[in-house]
Length: 487
Image (cartoon, rainbow, N blue to C red; front, side):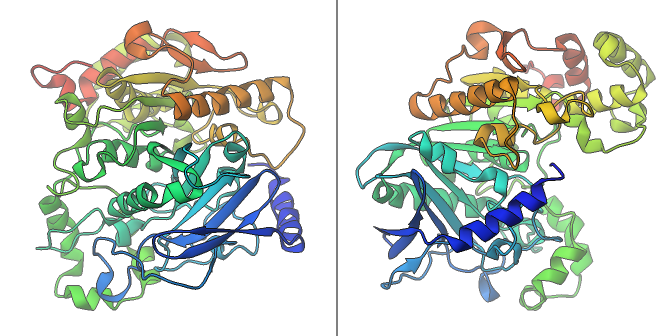
């Protein structure tokens, strides 16, 4: 994020290895774990929540871990799940820079003094990375500052890419990365009271693919009752319905023609991941996922839990630098007349072709689906548009993922100004209030018709670009076009 980040992370690595932390012991139903006490919090890292999914367990639902009797050293993160490149923003020397199939581990941060039966609110973080990358060991996703504010935070690794989202032709099992998340939530339901948490007050929150996975979990019967609230950051996921398992098997299975499932289980995980980077999407498997998530929301089949959902104002940053052609963003869904009408509705914000292309991407993939979910749920809507002061000279808005350090109050620099702190305290504080009470402190969308705008002075405002969104949704959303549905 910043040029100083690598140096800061390296210094933190040296400091963390030089300081011997006090050990705190907690007994889980699988065995005792010892975590490290620090300044006002305790962390437990790398705790197995499922058996290593290796050998015959590759492409199987997660199985319970083997129990242990000796104290499990939970002072370090576990290895990251296999991905094409090592995960970003991980402190040098961390085991999380290594990749392994033996990666189904979770991490817990508790306030100092938290004890069994404490009934503290619990927040469960699901990292992003397109379901092909990422790690809960990311520096910007450390839970210590939530623990300082009286909240227990849990994060987990889950299978990614082909190891998490491939289904062999003829098999009924699929969505293994999502089943991992369900297994972690079940572990939390069973064990979090031993850490001082309330198993009946669990809030899942996640960004990008993590947010998209939460949308899926909200419609998965196996996940119902495992969490009480949800926060979805930039997880709209687009309008396209999830593929059916049979269609995925037909499309993807051809590349493995003639290879048995047992033979594929013997192949190198690293080679499989590098050669099949396109496998990352949940499928309708008629087990975990009975129907496409947006259809489930439209039909009233999603879990009826309170939701915060929102986006950043420059999600189009995912398109990358350079000039972009608006006609290529949704070339199979929008014709020239559609583009002309939508551009007029955006007005001055579509000031040139690149700006217009980024708006089409942002609202077609993120904002439109998020608004749809908010209108079909008990939801609070937000838009994050603030740019950290040191970045304002080169960024006009909040890029994809740029809210995460504000949420976690984690920075590799210490020269934040008053506006930076105000926004940080607002979004971090609102997430905590929601976890504790089910209300972030501002009005839900259905009651107010407004969204929370996290800019230099956070306030409730009318949702932006509604006319353009209406036109865009009408063309992109199959639910909008179907009889009986509306935005």
